[in-house]
Length: 123
Image (cartoon, rainbow, N blue to C red):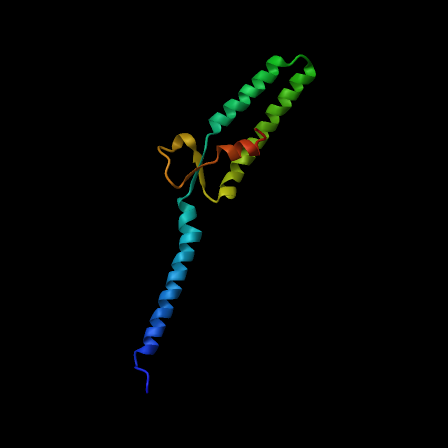
């Protein structure tokens, strides 16, 4: 028995559909979904906490050495904060915005404030 003439065309069609579906899936996973993810960070909260810690250290400082330690802590924080903010988008592979700029969280919104605290050496 001879195979019908449409079988090679059907095989070609199925193969094309599989390749297109795989390409769309790959595109969705590598381009579309990461672009939908938005990281938000509350820099003001982190800054206020560090400022309170600095103020507390300065008010309790009994010696010049304690004051110098507090100043060193503030200087280190001021140097680490911009670096940490630059690293966050690379770490999460997402767009990072200030928390105040987000009108309402979505399923694609991730709060990165804890990671920022960790990067700047806060508990």
